[in-house]
Length: 60
Image (cartoon, rainbow, N blue to C red; front, side):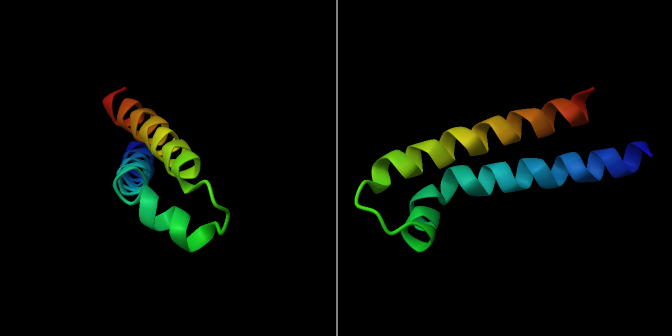
């Protein structure tokens, strides 16, 4: 069971890092409104939080 939780946490970390680095590209594809800076900033914060949660799951 511990291996499954570690695998899920690793996927969470991977998705969080992808969200942080590709936030601008994701907002251009997903959203069509004018203020993409706010959306990119929000995706970066969300990706950071997901990464931290996944890393804490692996650590503990």
